[in-house]
Image (cartoon, rainbow, N blue to C red):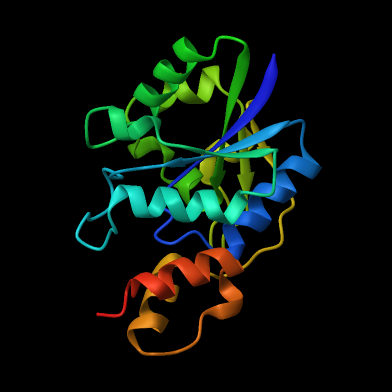
Length: 192
């Protein structure tokens, strides 16, 4: 079975930090592919700041277009909103029985895993690869047998920081890949 890491996120926008995490997961774990699962709405976040789903998906596609070990995934666009990981995992398992799906998440998400729907089922049935986030150690779940902490460079880059920089007319050129930078600049995203 092909071991596939699912990297869930709003990717509003996708930035170099996301790509460094995905690439490190591919080179430092048993994962053979990483799928960026673009979420229409995280039940723990506000939707008001999100770009349209198709724009965020397109930015992911252009960011990874040259890497055949990465894929943009829009499965949650076809599922009820808000998106629950446990539901997405069930649908992916049905569609791709030849794959072993694993989760990729930051230690901040692992800290809050107890707030997720059916988190015990996820924790006991899926491998979870965790990258460090500033100020978060992963909480009680860090020592679970299905949790693997992966040594990824810790970067304090966030999509919200990028959006704020754009609103304040500051350069974000090196925080994004060239195709993503070009796409959002041409579309004038996040300027207001």
